[in-house]
Amino acid sequence: MPKLIFLPHEDICPEGAVFEVAPGISICDAALENGIDIEHACEKSCACTTCHVYIREGFDSLDEATDTEEDYLDKAWGVDPDSRLSCQAKVGTEDLVIELPKYTINMVSEHH
Image 1 (cartoon, helix red, strand yellow):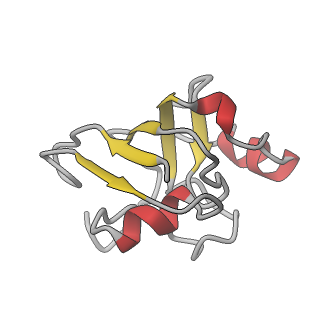
Image 2: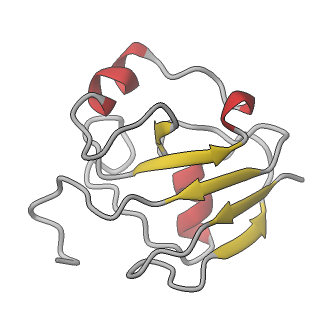
């Protein structure tokens, strides 16, 4: 099974995290199931950008982003070529190294 390797994030996972997951699960679901509280204001329906992540290794093993995901990524804070919405990116067969952005554009988050 592939490993998800989350790089340390000051607030969400200060120590970072590593865990194995079954292929086909979304990065967001896998993170939430393993105690990483990724924001997901639209309840994972691809209608916001709060679950934006950077895929630092293994990006090419993911399916291509849909046009809808690409449209929302255009609105995300700090987007770069390795950006994906974690609710839409499904784990493939390769390990992934994931970085959580420092900020999201969710101004109504209960965590802020």
